[in-house]
Length: 434
Figure 1 (tube, rainbow, N blue to C red):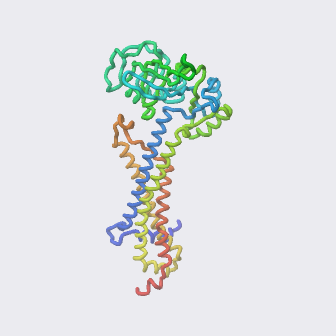
Figure 2: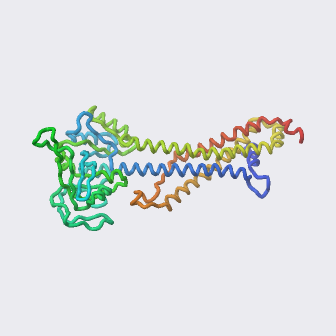
């Protein structure tokens, strides 16, 4: 087996302490510790930010669909059953369902709230979103069953409702978000009024528009984990929405679920080609572009800021190697006198920097994982306040590779100047007074 180059043995010897009872010098230890902490901090921060992003993404996609299709020219969409079948024939599409989307006013005996009212087909909706799983009180299928009346029931901590305000039998069902139900003081079995700002034309003429009001019975309460959804969304059956908004046999659009959420842009373009130029398909990334762009920018900025820790640690490498060059001038001169080239001398000190960087990276990666495990395990939150009980964590392999490469590259760059100083040392000048 071929012998290792002598540069490796010399480089390792220079990293050791002068005293026999020490394995490495203090300067080497500080340099390695700086790289280790920088790598651990980077992995910990990126893991937490990625975890929060994916948790937010999961909550958004649990309530909304992957792709939404609208008419480009008209507000409402006709022949939606035929369009749904054509959409489901597009590759990678799992399911599709029509929906109605309107802004309304919701009133109860104790509150008024402006909300988004969605009309859905409960049987199809469960194939496209996780709404059925998010319904914590009642059932999604109860939307299609008229209320039977009875005493209203409350969610945890709200106490029993007064029987005098129970829903009247025969009202169509509505499912409210958890925060919305608490604001309105309306829970399972209670009645609420849905007020549409624009109703049928009054006898006074087309200009005098009167609101349309209809009573619904609360048949369920859902909790998505997103405050914006839980406080501003309500669901009714698709047929009831069409009747309430005088839409006839039309809908607002079609929701689509696909098998790969990161291919939604390509699938949306394929859907537009299948349906024709009068239809517009937008994926979840486009619908939430501002939010996810801000999260991405924040992650990049945090990475660049935390890289400064590694850069500061690299100054320790520069000072360590500079001190070694200053202390080992005699040994360097002897090596050059024995035939060592400038490149060989440079390799010795570059190897020192790489060893420090590699050692710090190898120790820093498991340290970062340990830090994340401790946070995820022992740092808990009150879910009624923060909507999460633990800090979401997810470390991506690409992030680990990027952090490792950055640490090693910075460590290597820190060796260039000291290595060049050592390589240009004149042996005669160094040995003149020895």
